[in-house]
Image 1 (tube, rainbow, N blue to C red):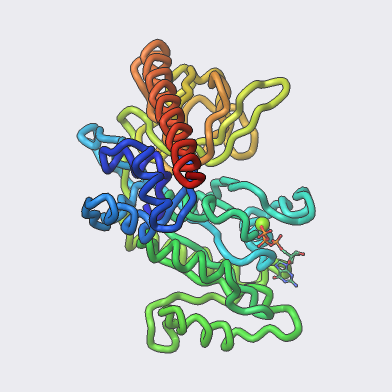
Image 2 (cartoon, rainbow, N blue to C red):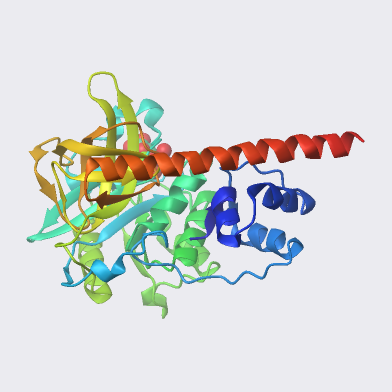
Length: 370
Ligand code: GTP
Ligand code: MG
C-alpha cells in the first residue's frame, strides 16, 4: 500500500527499527514505531540508509505480503464487489449508503460525523454488494487509506454545492495509489446552488474526465436525501464489478481484514471482519495481528446470528482474547493453541522492537544535548 508503519518498514529493510527512526530523523521526520509514513518519506529514509526501494504494485486482494498462502487458492469463484464510499466531510457518504440500504445510520451518529468504517451488504437483483462507509473528517487519513486498499471500487461522493475539497483530493490520491476504479457520485443535486458541471470541471484537474466529456470516469448525479439517481449509481457499480471479474476461493482457510473493533462491556472484544478469502465459520481459530481467538459467535450486518461467511462478507465476531486494531489482517489457523502461540510470538517481537526504539530516542536526545 501507499502507507507503511515505521516498524513494518524496518522489517522490510531488514534493519533495526532504531536505525530506521534515526534515518527518518536525519530526513527531518520525527516518527514513532507505529506511525504510518508514505512512500516518499520511506524512500528518503532508505536512501540515507543506502538501501534502494522500489515501489510495488498493490495486491488487489488487500491482503499484505505476510499472507503467503496464495497457494491455497484453488477453486476461484465469483465474489461480491467490495465498494468503499469516500469523500469530503459532510458531502453525504453515510446518507448515500442510507439511501442504498433504506436505513438511517446518519441519525444515530454523534454530531453527524462518521468516526469509523461501517460495513454493509446489500442484495440487488440477486447480486450482493458489500459497502464500506468511511469518515470524511481530515483526522481519519489512515482509515481512508486502509479503506482504499481493502476495496474493489470506490464511490467518490462530491457535493454538487461544494465541489472538490481537500479530502476529496486525498481520496482520489488513495485510489490512484491503490489502483482502484472510481465512480463519482455527484450528490446533493436537490440543493440550491448545486452545479454538476462545475464538479465535472474540477474533476478534470485531477485526471478524472467524465465519460460524457470524452473521458472514462463514470459520474452519476444523485440526491441521497431525495433518493434520486440511486438506481443509476448501483447499476454503474454492478457494471464496473462485472468488468473487474472479482473472484476468490471460498473453500480455503479464511483470511481478511479487521474493519472495526471495540471492547463491549458485556460481550468482551468485538470485531467486524471483512472476509476476503475462504469461509469463516463459528468455531474457527484465528490469528488477528497480535491477538487471537476461537470464534464463539458471528453476526451479519443486520445483527442476525450466522454460522459462516464467505468472501467479501463483513461479519461481527465474538471470541477474541483482546481487541484487535482496525486494519489488522486476520488468518484462520489450525487450532486455538497454534493461534495463541503465533500471537504471543508476534507480541514478543513487537515489544523488543519498541524497546529498541526507546533506546534510540534517548541516545538521540543525548547526542543532541551534547
Ligand atoms: P462524514 O461521515 O462526517 O464525513 O459525513 P458524510 O459524508 O457521511 O455526510 P452525511 O451523510 O452525514 O450528510 C451530511 C449532511 O448533508 C446531513 O445533514 C445530510 O442530511 C445532508 N445531505 C446528505 N445528502 C444530501 C442530499 O442529497 N441533499 C441534501 N439536501 N442534503 C444532503
Ligand atoms: Mg458519514
